[in-house]
Picture 1: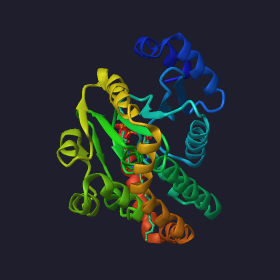
Picture 2 (picture 1 turned 45 degrees about the vertical axis):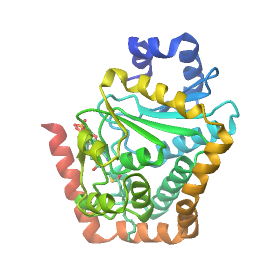
Picture 3 (picture 1 turned 135 degrees about the vertical axis):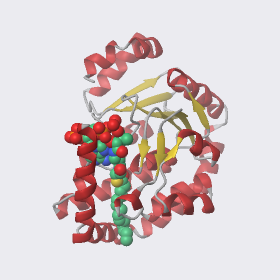
Picture 4 (picture 1 turned 135 degrees about the horizontal axis):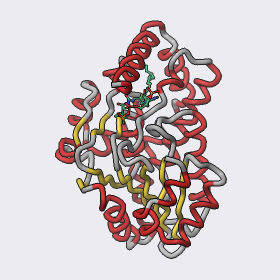
Length: 288
Ligand SMILES: CC/C=C\C/C=C\C/C=C\C=C\CC(=O)SCCNC(=O)CCNC(=O)[C@H](O)C(C)(C)COP(=O)(O)OP(=O)(O)OC[C@H]1O[C@@H](n2cnc3c(N)ncnc32)[C@H](O)[C@@H]1OP(=O)(O)O
């Protein structure tokens, strides 16, 4: 959907109002892939991922997400962030597989470092963060969701860390993010088997906090945010940081090693072959 079409959507207009659409327009001049609407009254920013067709995360999109997070973190009026998608079927399809298939090493390295930055920035955000998961959310999409403090997901979609199904290994910080939400045993089951769970299955293990219909997902996220923002920021932020810093420090200490592992792993012939098959199947499925 083009930006013009997006702005014309009655639901979006009603939800945001004219003033916000204006703010959204001005920020989209910086990136049309990440649409931001910061409500000056509430301090809540709605951030819509907008990279058609499926919000897959390539280097440029990740950089845009990171810049957006930096801007919001530097804006003292901003207290909460709702992460969602402009595509009402796909929240985020995870990493752009084309970044990992037959890659140039320099770009692959930059890509992974940027993903690490996004993870640290969102997972450790000073803001109260809520994922309004309005579509499928595999792998890197699930990672973004588990970075948030609360997850509200629309019924009848799927979510999970499905890396092993692609013949790749979820990095330790993907696993840590998941474990922080659902605990060791459920993470072990979900990650080893590369489970893609339905919204209801995800809700049963606590991977999502609320299951809702598509029409109300953003309103529910706004309502939930109100209760988070009733807590004094310093108390909430320090409590969050106490819980999340150990995992962030773990990645910081092993950043370079993690990049090296990733590059070595992805460039193996066997992994390239597995990715090649996976892409072929995706394309076949898309054509049907
Ligand atoms: C020692 C160890 C050290 C280090 C660790 C090593 C390795 C870890 C490495 C990597 C970790 C990766 C995590 C990831 O995120 S991998 C990506 C996983 N994502 C997926 O598997 C999702 C695949 N996509 C889908 O399942 C579906 O597309 C969907 C459910 C998201 C949406 O379905 P739709 O029916 O709505 O859309 P489609 O018709 O399927 O797709 C449209 C279009 O988009 C293309 N596409 C889909 N997903 C991706 C993607 N992730 N990347 C790039 N492109 C994607 C799809 O091919 C179609 O394209 P065409 O129209 O055919 O051109």
